[in-house]
Amino acid sequence: MNSPQPFVAHKFGGSSMRDAERIARVAAILAARDGEPQVIVVSAMQGVTDALIALANSAAARSEVWRDALSQLRERHLTAALALLGAQAEATVEWLEREFADLADVLHALALLGTPSREALDLVQGLGEVWSSRLLAEHFRVRGDAAVWCDAREVLRVRAEELGVMVDWPSSQAHFDTFRERHPGSRYVVTGFVARDGEGRATTLGRNGSDYSGAIFGALADAAEVHIWTDVDGVYSADPRAVPEAVLIPELSYHEACELAYFGAKVIHPQTMAPAIERQIPIYIRNTFNPEHRGSRISAERSLEPPVKGVSAFGGLAILNVEGAGMIGVPGTAERVFGALRHGGISVVMISQGSSEHSICCVVREAEVDRAERLLDDAFRRELDRGLIERIAITRAISVLAVVGDGMAGHPGTAARLFDQLGRGRINVRAIAQGASERNISVAIDTADAARALRAVHAGF
Image (tube, rainbow, N blue to C red; front, side):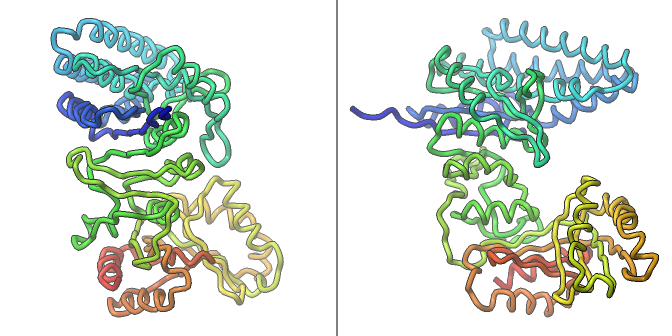
């Protein structure tokens, strides 16, 4: 007896769900994948999440502008419903009217309170996905293609931890299995971004949460693949807007994708991949507007050729340098540096320390560097007063450029070529970091040089 065909998880972003025309395009793409069981996770219509956050904040500020903004948002969704569903739109229009009436009540309450509570903001900002997913599910029905709408708030259970939002897998799996038993089908349209916490309160997965939802529901459905649909053909060797010569990377490993994503590649967020990595589910980055293109495949498989897969860079950073002869050979100095930053909630992007131990250099976001300096000044006040630490120095307007590839490990000459290209371009390197895995070499450079450096290094490889 043949085993049932496995599910394929699909996730469509806001640009793919912008209006009725694009939602219809999404349905057509999925319907064309004949016979494939699908779990489809969608974002809100483009710009809606930001609009909802602005609504909550303006209502809490007791500004009357929220009423007109709410009306515009309501009209946008009603117009999409009528365009997608035609003569069969009545029930969905009534549902939307109730949704917006409830939202108006919440916003009115925020205006009375004069402050946006965390719970209210989580509830409001996740509504866009609820509306867009319902529109897509109803459009499938009108097309004659069966689809089950799944509100993720009734399935997905999460908890907030120090490293971010974590999924309660046993509880979520049990809820999802129960939902499928009650609503059998081969195509589920699921709200991205939203969930409930352990107390049953509506919450969200944070920014990039819809991508994360796509991988989560792929894991819950034991999917064979996860397809992330966006507005580019896949992952490129560099940002094509900065490097016109950038080429598509057809295959890359989870590790390479995580490194490139962390260092500025906008296609996929590293957290998104965690459920897929754990269950070894391949991820495809696809283009909604070029669905025939295979895109980029991200999997556990490692290809060592070419040694360098991509070059990535991002700015808005600053260097924080703690230096002094009193640090040499003193155990616990690094712990105190990073402990102080941790207690201040400051994320460190890159670390560099010379073997002399005379200085510890770390790269943080420029918006946080002044607070980071104050934290370190407090932590090392005694050593600064006694001259054991000479200074805590800041260098602003920094970018980090990273060269990434699994094949760099044990491949002589990669670093030499990187620094040769930077030298030819007369680009000063402020700090260097390379992990023992050898799949990433990162350099901190002046932001003014970043675009030139990116083009030069990409050309060199």
